[in-house]
Length: 50
Image (cartoon, rainbow, N blue to C red):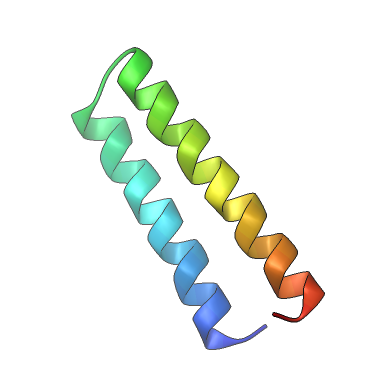
């Protein structure tokens, strides 16, 4: 794994953690879904070699 990929996943995790403590209800779920989608997209791009 490249450092850039690891940093991206760490940033997504940090944003999700911050959303956990600062948001509630539907907004928290929306942010988690968005970050989950970005994480999946990042993993697919990494596996494809982009």
